[in-house]
Image (tube, rainbow, N blue to C red; front, side, top):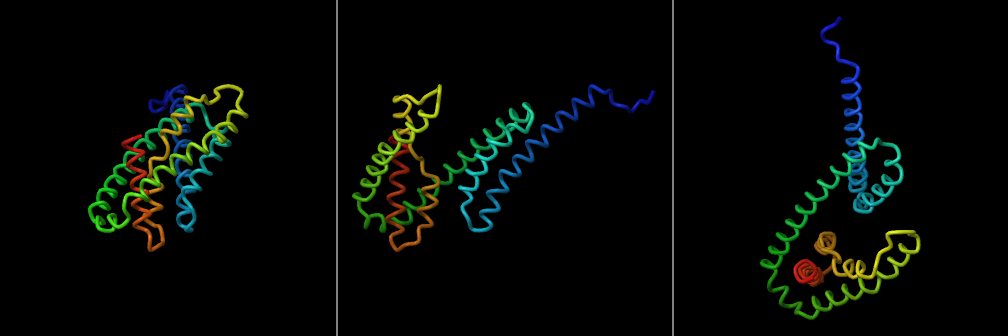
Amino acid sequence: KCMGRVPESQSSEHSKRHTTEIQVVILLIFSYLSFSLCEGLHLSGIVASLSGGLTASLYVTSNITQEAKRMSKRMFKVLASMSEALIFFNVGLNIALFLVTNRSQLNSVGALLPLLAILLCSFSRLLMLPPFVMCMNFRREENKIKISEQIVMWHAGLRGAIAWALAIKFPSQNRDAIVAATTSVILFTTYVQ
């Protein structure tokens, strides 16, 4: 008998694991490809990522193995946690730098605009959340979102990474006022709420 031959059971086990890894890598590449392609065309990479994620949840999950589903879920969870930590570190650093370097411009804005921004953001979340939850609950048979969970959703709100990026790139002579208001909302929702 040939000494270098791998037994059939070990070969199929290796092939199965290899297939799972390939499926997960392809899923990761295509997830990033939609973002990169749209960013390269100067379109919204965020919208592309959202659309790609929704499409993948509809079509990919029925076409990959159970092990690939578990592995990709773990991998995306780790990547999401790492990305969130890096983004909030970056936002915190940028807010600190902005507050130090633009103190005179922030003084000209005053306290009214940031307070108004905090109140309007909180009020708009309070106003918009119940209709969306009602639409979701209408379509669900079980696991309906309760009032107590809606209060937590309203309380959690937006933490500000996307808002901060948009405010920094805001094309106006009032950019500093917009950044000051956005900064105050981010700091309020992150530390006070």
